[in-house]
Length: 49
Image 1 (cartoon, rainbow, N blue to C red):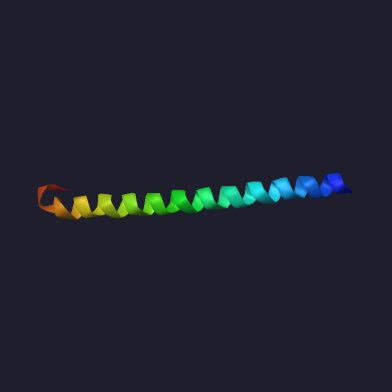
Image 2: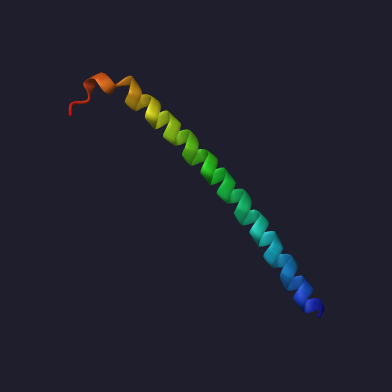
C-alpha cells in the first residue's frame, strides 16, 4: 500500500511540474504572438495583396 502512495506522490509532482511548464510556455507564445502582430501592423503599408 505504501508503494502506491509513493507512486501517486511522484505522479502528482510530475503533473504539477508539467502544468507550470505549460503555463509558462503558453504565456511566452502569447507574448511572441502579440509582438509579431505589432510588427505586422507597423509595416502593413508595405504589404501587397
